[in-house]
Length: 343
Image: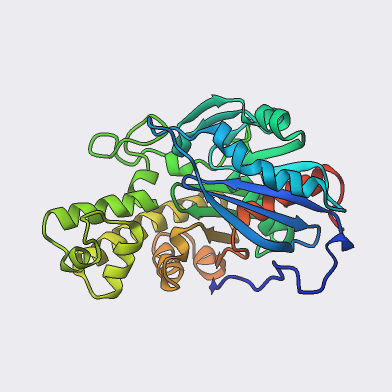
């Protein structure tokens, strides 16, 4: 059974007093964008979610000091606002040490052992509650969203990267190092596959993420197999969004690309369900928002690879509840840390 994104009061209604409940400043650093927002204990966004581009240096490495400069005005404003809990909820698209905030390995930012949590504390003068973005997203869905009341589910993100986090036996499951869920870095084809930001080759992520879709579209354009992409990319540079647009226009090459992506995503999700007997999978991320039919197509194909009749009958697949579940989960993490979530 497929579910569309659940309705959720994610934005505070006009006229509500921001001091009605405590709020935190939440930050989600993705592979290409930074999302920033103030969120209260009801899971409501206070005001607008701000989006900034991730700043990269000439070597293609995300610049942590420039990120801190972006965040500082938001932190200063929050400090001056009544009800602010002085801890930043920090979501990052990679493996993060949840105690220190060290970015152990963040493939899409090309960070290895960057002491980002300590930098946040020093530069912004605030505490920090850090975790990988997929953990934060799963926490948001379990606290306020589609996963509320579920005992066994997975959050799966399809965006600049591809990964998951697990909620098992009624609680978040991180594994031995809190890095569980990196199934996007399972090797699919290390011989004929593509280099991955994690340092290896042929990871699933390199076949199904937004950059992977754009790369396949670029190849189709360069080989003269996609008239639609030729019209959509006058400067010759193909984006992921253009591939979806080309498919909507009836382009066979674009359809072939996205059909292959859907098949691989479905296989990997079904493998997770077959292994863990999940009741729910919540799919989110930028690529999932490309077209309303993408979720339904993945859901239909996933059932082709499920082992049991029970899984094919009972598995629910839902879209993310929030405009950015990782951002909302970053707030939930702070509230949990401070004992502020309502029972």
